[in-house]
Length: 194
Image (cartoon, rainbow, N blue to C red):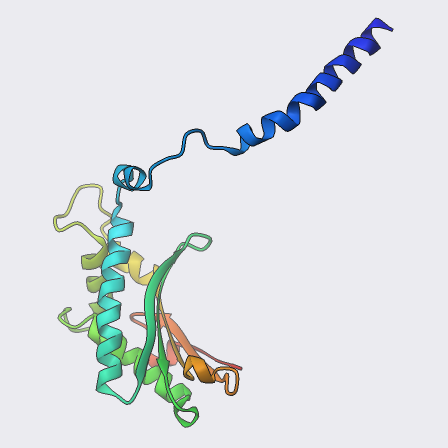
């Protein structure tokens, strides 16, 4: 009997104390200053490489649009941790008649050409470019010997050819082509949406 009364008293006290403790449990402690937190976070070569790739892609996509008949909608780069891929993307606005596989492949080639411009000619241009974007300026003993090749496997470029955002509800047809920076035109994955 005493044991049941003791357990009941403990559970009753716990039930009364739990709602009062919940707001405290939900807080992270004292409020952290955003700038202090940002200043204390280290920047990795992955972060730095993604930022450099984003900047290069913005310029390359703008050049590709200016060289042709397209309007650049948006470009950027993000990291997908679930499959350890870095994805660069560029969306171009085209009239419905120009939203074709051929135009998507042409824009893909223009963007890649602008990105790897200045790389050694040949099949290793994408690897050389990505090694320069994601690596140190000097080689270290811990650096993978095949850094550029590994990055070429992990970096994908996705080009989308679609309508103006204001017209997307009326005509949502888009063509998307995706591949590595060293993919031949026949190696790109093509899909039509909408």
